[in-house]
Image 1 (tube, helix red, strand yellow):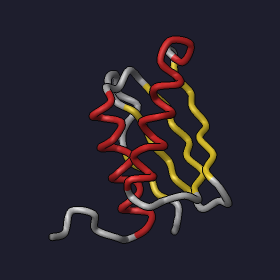
Image 2 (cartoon, one colour; image 1 turned 60 degrees about the vertical axis):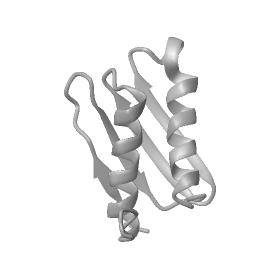
Image 3 (tube, one colour; image 1 turned 180 degrees about the horizontal axis):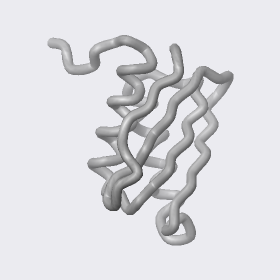
Image 4 (cartoon, helix red, strand yellow; image 1 turned 90 degrees about the horizontal axis):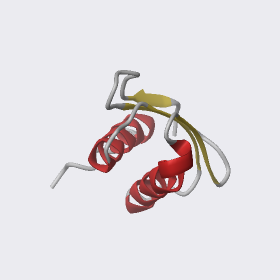
Length: 89
């Protein structure tokens, strides 16, 4: 795994940065962290688990992204970081 990024800092989006690590660590910066921080972390963790990634440092800067956007950005960053195509047949 190498460092990779996906997403933007535009409203309604989330920027996901992934880097190699031991274990899973999720750092979240969000203006709605008090209300939705747990849910955002769960979506990130579940998406990574579904991709078979257990060891990663994830920095997420949320600008009001919906769950589907979070999943898409995490998946894109993971594909870039691992070089594995999750969309292949």
